[in-house]
Image (cartoon, rainbow, N blue to C red; front, side):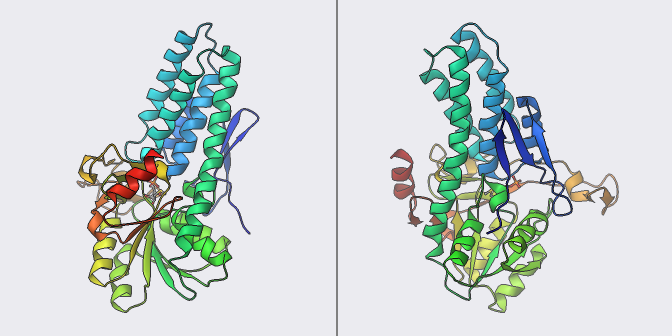
Length: 347
Ligand code: MRU
């Protein structure tokens, strides 16, 4: 089976596929300091909630390797500064903050180790987060594939595939698993303006996996649903609140409304690292606003008059009432989501 390497730790360096260049070019960049990893998250060389969590953890490990403190106190102060920089990269996907918290916790738990051993320990933890993410995606795939039948057409939005994670994928992981089980699944992909993760990344990834794929513009989904050509919608998530509200790529909410209107199941696939039980509902989740140029231009080509006023939120909020099932590595959660999500997060 085709596998894409999104991110990797190799010889004390981080290697990332430059997702800005896909699908035309497959270029891998090498990073040996945390500041350049932070830039790569910011400029979306790497993107997707689980992937930026892994990148942040590896960034902390690189940062740790670059610290030459003699005392734990000084070392920890510097680790905190590294985490602070990485935390400023993107505000919405909680996996980033989850990974940074975990790296800080491991640092504190190992304060008695000599500094070189502590640096190794942080490197091991980042690699562990990477492997756990792939394993979670595999389990999510097995759980979610139960919802798919042979011959179904699934609509997806943005990229929740191998490219959004350490590997395999969240929403697309469900589709890949169904495929491995011998089910033929046809996937309809929204192009996902303004950054085009659907057409550039998801269509590319699905095609490489040999999955039947049809690309549409974002405003065509309603017509397909009206014509009864979509059996279900599966998307990923950047952060899920304790009550099951979902924050995901801009354009997810209108799809959920459309799905409800047409009586089509709306599934969300995400690892537990994407669930934030500290936020009661999606209103509390910050929504990143990005550069207006993403809207006024495609690549460097202007598609709007200069100096036009632009609104460019990168994510939107889908209320839990529009979500049929949340697919995680632990199982399938149905409304009311709160108790199930809380019990999974506290185990
Ligand atoms: O802005 P991005 O590309 O980092 O957005 C994240 C996403 O890819 C999507 O919102 C995705 O559906 C969730 S990430 C598994």
